[in-house]
Length: 261
Length: 313
Image 1 (tube, rainbow over the protein chains, first blue to last red):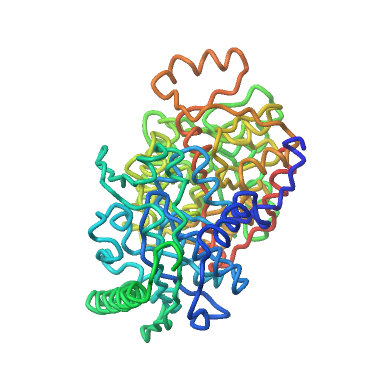
Image 2 (tube, rainbow over the protein chains, first blue to last red):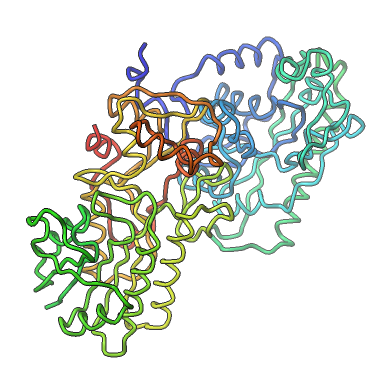
């Protein structure tokens, strides 16, 4: 097909494809057959309106965002957008590809538009880059949740937060070290040592992934306020971090094998 | 009855603003102001020519003599050929002279509408999808953005000091349609349109009818405040290229900013599109604005992005 014959309406304003791309189909095949993702607690995920989905984060090219986004879309038929570090948009193809599968530059205004104006689900990883670069000894131990900005985003949009604990994602790309380059930190994974930096970023080990959605956290604070009390934000953020850590500990205690679940 | 002047009144945008306000009942007189006459005598009809030298006083005297109460300043964004890609130093100084003339204690001016540009927002990877009026000037803002910011800040300082003058600053997206064409519109007009490999940024335009309508809305209603102006929606650069029926010319994502002063004249002579560093940033990250504020205030665009593309096709 010539360039100008492409359908012009296949991308929405966020750059997301209306139909599933080949990359998405490939990821869904891995979701079903490679990672054998299993969900529990999906009844806690709202069936309408926006919600901020908050989860634990790990790995070099983390699959956690994809697992949640594709999982919710597959299981509940609702669109999910993932907030990602703006650095992905500085390089050719990465930002464009992320856009096409629902990735959005991690900015509070983008999150607000999606949650409030479009009633969408938005995935965020409050650990930020600390999650993917944490050492092996810290695996499945949640790092600090920034300054609680994600709680403020949810409060301002007037939507609940749904914590989602993911187990298995940290075993798909085990971190063995860390590289500090020009102020940025990059995880060195076992995959990249075995398969090289490029292939290793995509060749994930077939760990069994389990996802558990926890009861939604609603807030009494009125939406659209300029600011919210720091103590309230911190309390809520720490409460959610504690709930997620408890769920992870419980899931790990029940796990018999990292490959079979 | 009110009396208005349109600065930059001989430009494609200024001419349309004059015509629209002329047809409005509220104004008994609308005069276009330019610094120099055009070569084409027909284009000089309805225009007056005022030298800014040596300072703002000739313009202040003119405002007083003609009892002008409304100034629409299109000079910052519109030149004789359409739209600037970059306001010249003289344009920014002119805007400052307007402010100084309005500040004359004998002045009758009660409404100043400044047509500014969304080039204020520097394209960056970390920016949100839609830029809002309250976003601060980016630390990486180029010369174009800082010139616009300087002119706007001067207008805002006038508004602060003269509370009886309503100062409206309208940040227009790139205007297309009629004879108006900005940097992206000029690229889209070429049969081969540059496209940075691996990027498909959001872009947005304002149709000239919407731009004129918004400026007239601000002038007629004596509006005050800072507003983004764009036609409805946004589109991706690849989609824009397809919409105008042209082919894309992919190029590597490498900026030639250091060689810009040397290469630009050469490319111009060869009639090959030169992608300056500011356009390069636009073609990587794009830029779209949020028009919720002006919509809440009562102005709504009538055109959408597909009509903007039709105007370029």
